[in-house]
Each structure stands twice: as C-alpha cells, then as structure tokens.
Image (cartoon, rainbow, N blue to C red; front, side, top):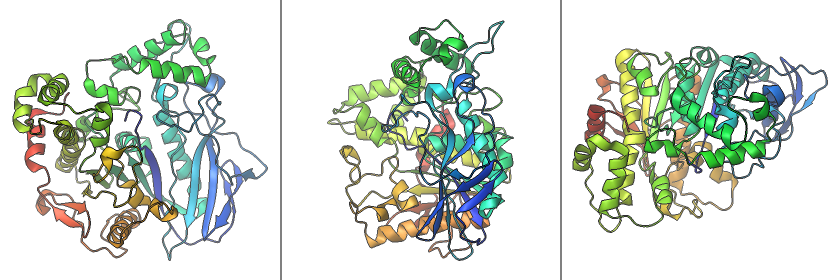
Length: 496
C-alpha cells in the first residue's frame, strides 16, 4: 500500500527427510546451492524467461533448458518493484526468479519458504492498453501470471528437493495476501497449491475495473511520449523511464475512489486472471475449496494515516476525510465513529479505516465462505506491539500494532539481529505462531502436530465464530472482537 508496503508471497511445503545434497535436478537442468547450519539453500532460481524485448508486457514464457549446473548460490537482481527502495530501476530484469528455496531439517517436517517470487509489479506488471487493428495491446495482470507461473514451477520441481507437491501452502501478507486471495479465486492457480495463509489483506480496497485500468494505461503511454497503444514504442523505453512515468501518473486517480491512492497500480478485474472482487467471490461461492488461515492486526492503518497526515487533524478535517471516502453513508458512519479527540483525530481515523479496510472485510469474507461452502477456515487477530525499537523513523508505530508488526514474529527475524532484544513472552508467542502455521501446512489443522498452548477452533457458527488472538503474555480466544462495528459495515456494505 502506497510506498510503505510489506508484500510477502511465500510457500510452506511439507517434506520428508532427504540427503543433504547441494545439487538438485530440476525440469530445466541441474542447480547448485549451498549448505549452512543444516540448511540447503538455493538462491535466484529462474522460473521463466526474462521479461525483455517482446516478452515485456506479455505472458510469461518457460525458461530454456540448460545443461551445465546453474549456480544458485547468490541472489539475482529482481524485477523493478513498486515501493522497493533498494532496487535500481535502471537495470533490465535479467530473469524471473524464485529468490530463495531453503530445506530446513526438523525431525520429519521441513518448512521451505519460497520468499518473494520475483514477479513484475507496477506499470511493468499491470499495464493495460487497447488492441489496434494491427497489434494486440498489453492485457495487464502480468504480475499475477508471473506468480502463477512460479507456483507451477514449484509443483513441477519441488519433489526433487524432497518436497510434496500435494502439500503446498501459499502464504501472503499485505499485497501478497491480496495475491493469495486472487489465486484462491483462479481455477488454474488452484491446481498448484492446497492450502493458504492470508495475512493483513486490505480486502475492501477494490481492484480496478477495466475502464479504470485502461485510463491509467493511457496516462502512462502519454507520459512515455508514445502514441496510444503503440507497443513497439512502449517496449523501447527503459525500466527507468517506465518507473518515472509510473511515479508521475500515480497522482492521477482513475476514479473518484479515495482508497485508490493507496494502491494506484495493481491487479484489475478482467474476468479471467482476476475473475471477481474478493468479497463478491466469497458471496457467490467462487473461492476455491481449500482450507485457509486468515487474519489482521489491531492497528493496521495507523502507519498510513500518520504518514498521509503528518500533522494533527481536527474534527472538521476528520469529517471531511470520511465524507470524501464514504459520501452517502456519512451520517451513519459519524454516528458509529464520532470525533472523540479534538486535539488530534488521526487516532479515530485509523480506528475507522482499520475496521473498514482490514478487520471487518476479513470477517465478512470468511463468514461468506463458510455460508456458501464447507471450506475449513481459521481466523486470528494479532494484538502485540514491539517491545524493542523496531520502527526507525516511523515513530508513530512505537507502542502500536502497525501494519507489518507480526512479520518479525512469523519469521523470527529478530533472532538474526543484535539490534533487537525480545522478551521471553515474545519468544513464546513467536514460537506458538510458527507452530500453528507449521501444523496447518503439514496437517491441515493448526492445532494438530507441534505443541501449542491453546486449541485453535475452526471459524464457524457452531464455535461462536471464535478467533485466536495472538498477544502476550498469552494467546486467547475471542468471539466478539469489533463485533458491533463489523456488523455495521456488513449492513451498509464495503463500497467507498
């Protein structure tokens, strides 16, 4: 979302123990990795041809086979990505790669995170233009097709790493969570994984429709000084030029939807790759029948609200912001979320927006799925802020559960840095989260397998819609979190 994003798209795969061999034969040829601390690692593994020349703004194409052993011992440059501060946009993406494959040996279960598929994003990944009589235009949603191609690669090759292609769990956070939901709606993607974990999906920020995406495509084309729909001209531009055009165009909304400013370039509903809006898919029973874990944090939008308004706002500006977003429902919304902090209403604004964008649509989607299908689902709430100084310049998140606060505990990244010291309670909470997710990946139930302190019931009317609340000093079950507010949004709808 905007420039502050934590997109993670990963896979968790169940494994049997295999020999510690640093060379693995894939469908395309042998690759050599390395072993360190009991981990076999393979870095920068290509899964498709690089998107250059005529392959830019085109569907992914299989990688050519190789004979010599591919050196997978170092990361490869990734494709230019929205919000990536460390990526030099002037390079040409050399390959579409899976950044990391790790085989981690633990008794009879191994987790393999395939961290951050290198899929094209922004204008390079989602440009849409019209066809002409002589030339097919850009059809958009290439970033999603890249991810699908990477999933297919895993299905075809992971057995050679000791994995089970029938026990693949797709795992995404933030933009990655949105992608995970798209793959749950996409029939072809569903062939390549069996379960999903969805973290912090901004479900009520709508994907664009075709008209809105075409408008942005036309604006980018004009900014690049190309004639409308001239793909030859567009493909002649450097990645640097495309990135600059994208940055310029993102300030022009393709509609009057205020929430579009959070995600100006991304997937659009084309009826094929992205068949529906997520809440519509859930209501109509078009979520693939795969078990999933889904959850959100208690203060998801705080970082975005406080960065968008870097000064205090009063009741008038608070009301104007809600009016600009919701229009016709403003009276009811102000009744539910009145301005209570005249000195600074940003806190009230983050409460209302967290409910609308994350908490309540997550509940709505899951309950709709449970009503329309027999899919097993588990819902969590993450409610813990860092005990350490982990936010740097984003000081508004100190002592608050901002978007992304769960990531260090899911991946235990704090254990690999001397800058962060966690409490014993945080370590226990982190271990519990990992055990729940690992149990789900291996056994299809987060409470079956590794030891956990609280049985996590399926999210179901029969269990009083209980969620698991991750917090310290101990996790707890919760069936009423934001209940009144979510029932309110369910009644008026998630349209802004």
